[in-house]
Length: 100
Image (cartoon, rainbow, N blue to C red):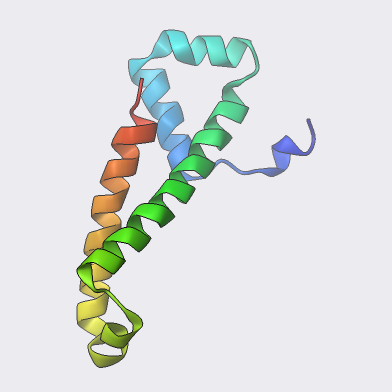
């Protein structure tokens, strides 16, 4: 158990905990009482980060957000990169954090 405690629950794990506490109190209580809450939250957090990386990489490829663009027009690259991150995060939140 000491190994699992080393993982600090990140942004998505905290968002999942808040969602469960607020909108799914029965699930939250069950996870808490069965001592599965921490592992559930760390699993969600890790899954979100992995999924986010996959979605962002695919969107960057589809939209031509490349190192060449970064070299040619850094501000445009940052603008597009931020847009991609926001859209990808929205997908991840609906798929994993706010899922049933």
